[in-house]
Image (cartoon, rainbow, N blue to C red; front, side, top):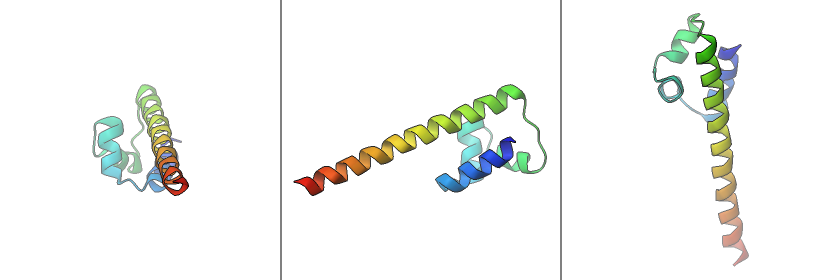
Length: 76
């Protein structure tokens, strides 16, 4: 179920629902509408899941780069 995955994503990335909706679907009310029972089209659901995966990957890469930079600073 998309809503459950979105809620987990919001918690994991400490992201407000309106920001997620604006970034992932171009609709700040997207998550609020899902919570009220909105059923997205299959294409919208797939696009949202893809956006979440890309965001998580970019976030992990950014976090890894930050850790590597910190490790290099300590190595000097």
